[in-house]
Length: 154
Length: 229
Image (tube, rainbow over all chains, first blue to last red):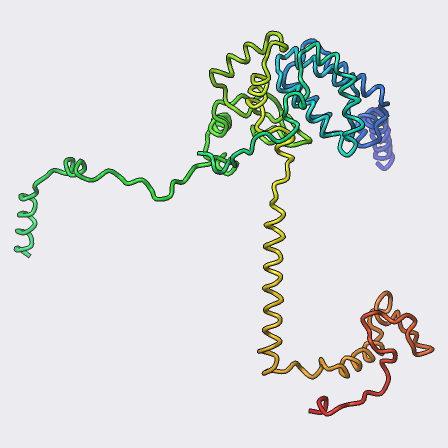
């Protein structure tokens, strides 16, 4: 009796182990929950540039990509901005391009006088080609309208 | 009994106008004194059968053009999510014509048209929503007013209340010294507090805390007449 039970337990445990072994190994790399990103800066730039260079990009994805960039602790490289400007041209949305330039200027933070002129110098050929004005040329780098509060609107 | 019935009958027969006509005579309902505007928010979501209907009720015929901040159909001007999920203005004829023109060469657009396109998409520019509001002045002002009210209350209590009902005896300077000695005897707070600052072998302070005025709390207390009361 005991022998039978022991054999059965033994075989069951062995099957269980054999079955579990590959599952555990397979499951482990899939659950990389939080670890440092191994992406280099160049890879990051390439990824975003190719994202904005996609031929079938639409307004939704473009906004998503630019929103993500604005949420990160970085200022995008000029070539990413150029790709984004061209994407704005492809989806025919002028306001997005201006808004993104404004956001870039805001991201320069305290070093706006050093970084922003450099970025504008780098992307100026594209801006001229596409007919995009910088916020300064449009005159919206200073507050233009004092708007009514939404709570006072009828 | 009989008379009251008769009266009722009489009244019925004498009724001049049917009810439907009475309604016509009634003056039209006056508008409420306070016009309450209905803002449809998250709390009203359950009152709609369909979520799309709720969204449409909130945003009118504005276009949903992106994911926005949190996937909700809301317009917010934020620096970290500069592209909200809605266009700010609902489509109107002029802007629709302008959108057709926008599909062409952008160099042909005038500055006003470019600004109109921007304003149709976004409520405020970065420079506008980052401009200082000056609200801090009111906040500081109200805070200072409240603080001064507190100081006034303290001064009035000192002047009029605690003159008539004196403070308890245990608040006298001598009692505080005795309390300090007692706390040292009880070794209160021996790790970081009072007793840790006292050297029990040499019977003096290792380092006297700034809030203790006595070099030697065990010194004999000289009682004055006030304390004896």
